[in-house]
Image (cartoon, rainbow, N blue to C red; front, side):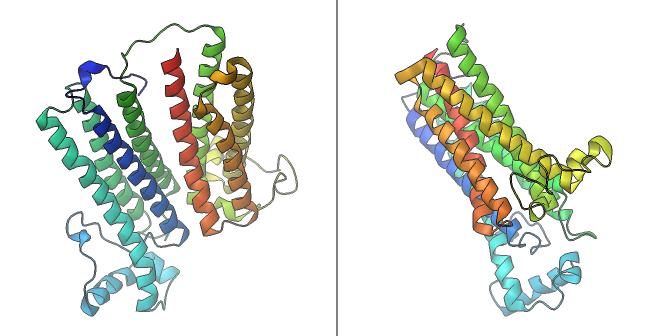
Length: 351
């Protein structure tokens, strides 16, 4: 994603239209992430026990359809172990959100795939762009498969999806969003793919942005593990955790605890988040001091968003994960990563 596109990649001055299309797809992916978070937080994600990419677009149309969907759900571990006795009306309440989530994903495929096919066949994008956009499409298809692979893990014995698969599903969504956003910025910038030498001060700021972007990615991956393990429902105090800055009994099973022990995973996410905001603010102040009035707007927005995001995270924790606040925190992670990419791209253009 670090390579930019030159004029040889574009044709007929259509690059702005292509960029707007990609940004619209980015927005649709962001909505998809929001819907996915809501299905998880409202325990709606296991309400549809089959994956039918084509027929699944058609919702239940009558009482017999609803009864059929409900009978299938009754065979699932979630109904047997958690929701036994649920009424049909209650089932409808959790079904619709998951249905909208799945249909929205298919709609993204159509909104991306059909214009891409037309752009490629009409010659409105250059040859170098085609494989990059094809890569995005393939990632989108893989994301659909990963979504079902995740749901399937909660339909066997334990009515909870694998936290590893959930994290992979979330990471793919962020990757698709970030890749399309970077391609859109490249098209809008329309500059040659030349890596220029940079001198001290600006190079240092660029290095800071790379480090910060890495921290944001690590933090959001641990956020996926926290969500999958429901680790945010315990130790709901800050800055102390279990009565201490560094709680006892971390890593009870060694290195694997970092990914599987609820306490250790939450501590890892908290620590990474705190480190991220410190690095973001230090870099922001350094950039302002060294670049002055030439500081890109993206860097200012990035510093502010880091403060907002840590506030959302603390609020989500101490209020024991209310749906609206947890959703805002998840979207804050997407906003923060997007701003990191924007800042990196904008700084590159100034070098």
